[in-house]
Amino acid sequence: MLTVHQTPRDGNCLFASVAKILQSCPTHWKVANSRNLREVVASSVYDEKDTDVLQALEMWQDIYEGAVRERDIELQVEFRHAHVLCGHSRPFHESVRRDIHAQMLKKSYWGDVFAIGIFEKQLKIQFLILMPSSSGTERWILHSPVSRRDQRGPFAILRLFAKHYQPVSEKGKFIFMYSTLPSSIRGLLDKNI
Image (cartoon, rainbow, N blue to C red; front, side, top):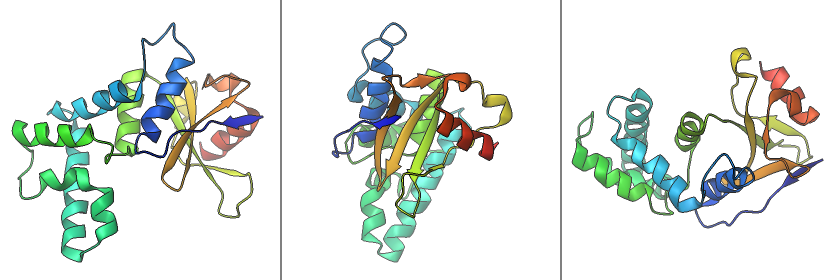
């Protein structure tokens, strides 16, 4: 049976979830907490050769500037970390990257697909994002794309509901290889490959 673990609703839920997952394997990872995991993600913006980083910065800039033009306050709040990118040209100089790094260290940057991608690169764990189905039942929808070549693992499971991440375990276990994934998750994964 899957257990969804509580995390604070303070802008750190993704980072707290990943910390809880990593803390379940203390022999593999040193002290993991929200603050040092947030630093791992924020520091990645300095990598000028990483095309994923540049694409994320460009996307955030486009979203934030579009939200300002459209007077979409909700979107401006959600992407407020990106306000420092406004008016700057790409590929963004070091001073702009330093500013976005500082913004990402704040709880107003709550984590997104970019952060999960950084965790996957750095930790060599694939995160499966599960969202409850729209019918409100306990059925789950797998959000993460996993190719057949990636299906070995290791995997960690996160629940995402109403912009709130929570780690998911089975019998106290948070990290799985494909063969040890809960059967309900493996079934979802097999449907998506």
